[in-house]
Structures are given as structure tokens and as C-alpha cells.
Image (cartoon, rainbow, N blue to C red; front, side, top):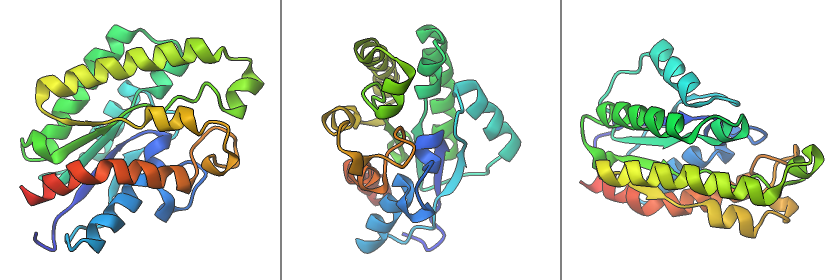
Length: 205
């Protein structure tokens, strides 16, 4: 790989790493793992903000106007659509538009794009404080993830499933940031490990 290889990370709080240091973010941990394997990859370029929905990410991309091609592009978006009660069909359509943009930023190569599923926040201390029904949140998260996975399959994009781990470790305080909602760097390390194989394949193509 060229030393100029670039990594674009698109998303919301889960990409920008709300509550963790920059090197604890999952894209940063993924880049570090890839670098340790000998891939020459720049630090991630982030277009991500806590609270963003799909349309807000679209606006953020338009404002930032990134110029490809990037060697690797990640996309993780949708939890705020679900949190706000937005329609699933709206998410599916806007996610598809974002995924097409991501592929464009990757030089038209779908194999260079990695999508990470939405974690389940419904059993976190934050959700309990809000009185949220964990089963309802779980069903909605599953529906949003199924839509994203279907769109990814249609485009030939890798879909990385991290939702099961978020549920299995929902009661482990070490896996949460201090706000009781967002993942800790330890949880993001799991995401990075899960994303490593498709990212490795992307950079090896």
C-alpha cells in the first residue's frame, strides 16, 4: 500500500467516540491494528458528530466535501433515527444514499467500504433512567440493522455485526463510557477486531 492511503470514517457518536479519547475510537483502533500488520494507512478522517441522524450525516458530508478516493471508508449510522422514532423506510432510503456516497468516496469500489451495525443501547443504565422498554428498543434496532444489512448485500458491501456483543455485555460497566450509554474503548476494541478482516481484505485488493 502507498503511504498516502487514506481512511474516511462516517457516522455519529459511535464513530467519533463520545466519552473516549481519540485513540480509543473504534476507527482509530482499527487503523492501529492495520498499521501493526504492515498496512500504511493514515489516521482516520472523521465526518461524524454525536446525535447525527442519516440526514444530518448527509448534510455533514456536504459541508465537509471530502475528496476521494479513500483506501478504506467506514459507515455506522442509524441509532439516532431509531432513538427519535423515525420511520424505518426513511432510514433505509437515506442509508442507501449514504452507502452509495461511501462507495463513491472509495473510488467506486464497494469492497473498500465497511459498515458496522447499530449497537443495542436499550439495556444500558441510560436507557433504564429514561424508562425505555428494552424489548421494544431491541426489536427496532434489529429492524434497522436488517434494513442496513439488506442494502449492504445489494451493494456488495461488508456488514460487520457488533450488536450481539453490545447486548451480551450491556451490564458490564467496563464496556461503557462514564455516561452509561456510549461504549468504552474496551468495547470499541471488540468492534475494531470484528471490522479487521473486511478492512484487511479491502486494503489487500
